[in-house]
Amino acid sequence: MTRRALITGIRGQDGSYLAEHLLAEGYDVWGLVRGEEAAPRIPVAPHLEGAVRLISGDLLDQRSLIAAIEQCEPDEVYNLAAISYVPQSWRQPEATAEVTGVGVVRILEAIRTVSGVRESQPGRGGQIRFYQASSSAMYGNARETPQNELTPLHPHSPYGVAKAYGHYMTKSYRESYGMHAMSGIMFNHESPRRGRQFVTRKVSVGVARIKLGQATELRIGNLDAQVDWGFAGDFARAMHLMVSQHTADDYVIGTGRLNSVRQLVELAFSYVGLQWRRHVRVDPQLVRPADVVVLRADYGKAAMRLGWHPSTPFEDVVAQMLESDMRLLSIA
Ligand code: NAP
Image 1 (tube, rainbow, N blue to C red):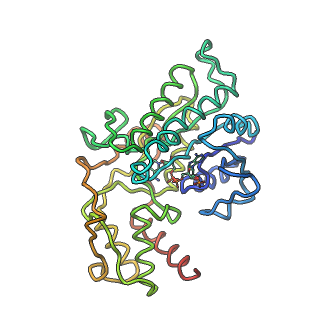
Image 2: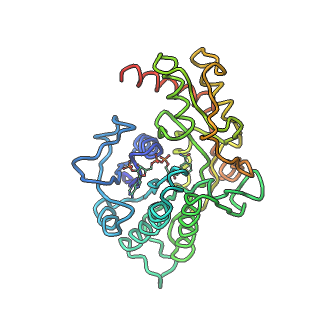
Image 3: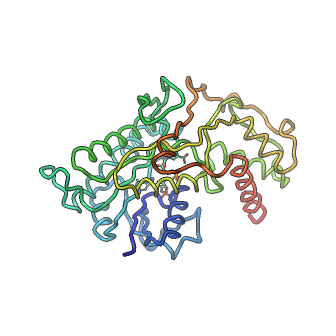
């Protein structure tokens, strides 16, 4: 029988890649979106419209989540919705706690309510599998590097703290109610559909503008910051692999490789045949304090148990982003 998946955050970067992956696997894919059912669009992936059924719901509203799960009757729920940008979480810590943290409990409760899972019947986990999008930001000022599933969490941003809450609640519902619930502890992953506020996309849009003669310089913060960057499509594949396992468990997903912002900038400019030093200006206002510990994934457990490995080199991700932004900006 065709499996049905409900994805929250389907209008975001990961939601669109996961929807594509699940459709290719023969799934019936539904997406939860805020607002009226008639209005919503998937701006990052318009080609998915028609292939995916959209229903309305909000992580801030318990009743809407129960109604969505009753209507959809999913086999699997992927909770990708969040306030996902760290600087925004500093500006709106309370909203971040509500959406990114408590929102996870609302959806777990909605699943529990609809599946009729009772506290008094541990082990009867119900039929619905649940995936939570946890984040390497939960490690924050980690005490060790690289980080794996056993590394203690030490979040330092409101985003990281909210993700840690959702992570622990997912684990708690798995252990207390026997729910088939799990978290992917995802390190950074990028694509042409990345939000424009994130540094990789700032660079790809900025470089494309310079190449097209629409701008002359790119202002950037700390060039020495190092990040474990992967490709969103590879990470969507990991989510599905996790949910398809017989036993629910948490996994670190990342590449284990670091690139600096300087390397990102060099790659992007050289892709379009320009000298980065001529165009890049370090803006002290954009420099954020460097992390005490560089976050780098040890994804050994995912490799061993899921057979998952990242398959897209960072150079290819940057090239894809440049191709896409050059196209978008030429027709704009
Ligand atoms: P994204 O592009 O920012 O997408 C987030 C989605 O959440 C958006 O579609 C947004 O809907 C939705 N949303 C926000 N508030 C909501 C609410 N109250 N109710 C329902 N939906 C709401 O994020 P992403 O990059 O795809 O990441 C997916 C998930 O993975 C997020 O939880 C993120 O924190 C986590 N994660 C991402 C990375 C990464 O590197 N990308 C790394 C680790 C973890 P609208 O479109 O309507 O605004």
